[in-house]
Image 1: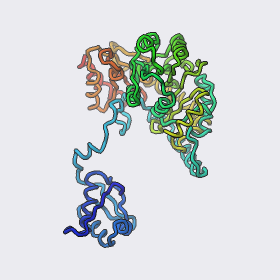
Image 2 (image 1 turned 135 degrees about the vertical axis):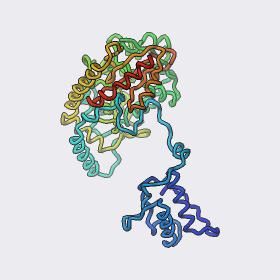
Image 3 (image 1 turned 90 degrees about the horizontal axis):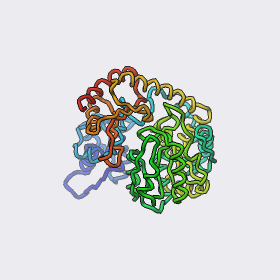
Length: 467
């Protein structure tokens, strides 16, 4: 009821009950009161408005006559589940559009959608039990403000995991739990406060990196990538004064190549010599489907110039919104202060659940199962594809279907939506469309056999028509 605005005119011609009825009806029709919302009791609303209970009862009865509310006796009065259609303009104005990169986030993952783990491969029953224990433990905790850096038990488990899986030795005090990757990036930009306004980004790269930098007042400098990753020499030529670089060394997003050892060393040397920082987005390091994962870039950083970032979005669930960043020891205290002031760690039950999932070995076992499943699904997709299709097998958890430079990859993706398919066009990942390669990223994570056999032919036909 917080969005209702009652302005009762006690001297007007319209009765008080009709004024109450009209205010509630308008709120329902405009979408401010959602279907199933419980209205205040007669007594509570009468007390709030300073009118009699009979006035409120009359208003509620008239709303019921108009089929806008349903009375359920002692349980209360609720907004009806069958409502008149809300005005289209109001409905659209009440929601801000999401960036194009987010493909229908409020629905179940579609065929070929990127960025979401397999829905049929996750141990939901086991996870539910773990989450229940985490929730009970959180309730049993003393009533105190939690550590804004994140629960120590989770930070210790992440430190242990990174030492084994990523060759990165750090203490729990160097780890900050964040609200996903976006939360980590926002904290890092506040923490580092790079002197130059120019920041290296890979070209192509995750589009929201450029958007986040723009919102924070920085200028993205797109640096080309090749089969060895970001071209450090070209970055220096384009912006030698940059004080920050954002890179995906493990699997370049979205093309999938690893940053070579020579390029890693060159990047770290540039950071040291230039008094610059490097943000390492450890994108999909756990889920290498081809070859071996290289150690984290931060494991080679002897000069404390790298901030390492990871999430559990692609391995457990994006709904967790749970990530982390590892800062150099000399930044630990300031990083904790920044987190406390701007973005404290996410919900306690989720942190405790992930800590148990890591501690008891469930996470590593889950990763191994997922890798086997994704390899099977990638191979199944390859078996269906035309032998003339130009495919890059190394695009992370996607196959990259390369298209001719004059192909409208965005148009193909939009047309595919009519078939409930969600391939991601490659060109929007590039900062400069004149230099953009064209292609489709075909996510393999949710390609069950029946769905793939039904969904691939329409996509293949769309691609053929656009060639």
